[in-house]
Image (cartoon, rainbow, N blue to C red; front, side, top):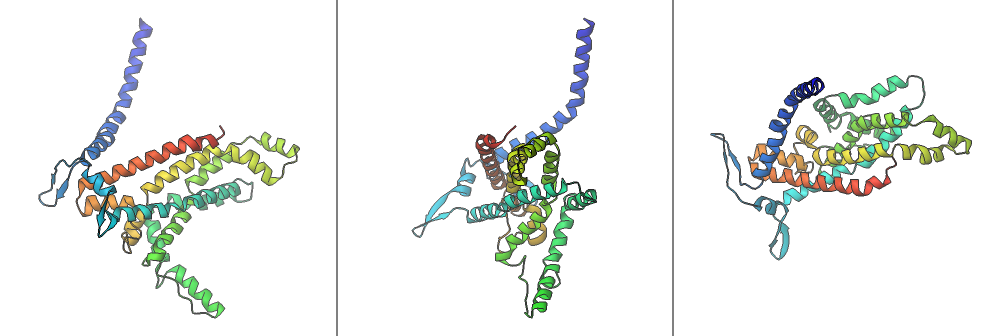
Length: 316
């Protein structure tokens, strides 16, 4: 009886400690998610003054406007061309993800070596990750400045040394160069970031016996990597790939908002920035919610496909 009473008291204390987090999850996560689902089926407009939310049930109209097409002058045209353009921007910016993963792995292998000063080397390469995102954007905005930026100055000096009058492009102001500029910055941030830390931890957890056995069998460096290292870090690669894809679909807002305001001509506007514009700039609350739920469904489907097919390549 005493044991049963003590167990109940222990359970009650545990639930009491869990209660604040549970309430926080329900109030600040679950309810907003359900509210956004409800608003995605509404023609909800935020009237500037007085601040009220005008709502009208429209069913799937927001999703039809978002994803549908109509016939215009004998040709099919998207109901919302901006949405498809910004979806293309988001996917284009995600093309840097394989390079980020490969670079992180190479850097982790280098940092896993027993070299003199390797601790300082690891710290230096992790600095961009812990730096404030706004500060990084401002730094790269200066680097890309066409008049006094570091990059164009280096191009001009290199041209001068070779006898040419070279001028760098208008990095962030050019439709052709704006997206590659943001991709280069995100690559710089990713190298040495959390992906490298995860790879480094995975490399250090590989038992040394495996390498010793491979050396006894006469394996060279590449054979040891392909037969020992790569299979052993495959769970880490799988996790990094899934998370990078999720972050890729959800990313791009901070850089675009600070450095380009989504321009030029929408060249750097992503789906996340489109949600922000609909909600805070144009006050189309219901439409912003429908874009957010479309994004959620896409990420959910891609994650399921990754787990279904990518999981078979992982060796646990």
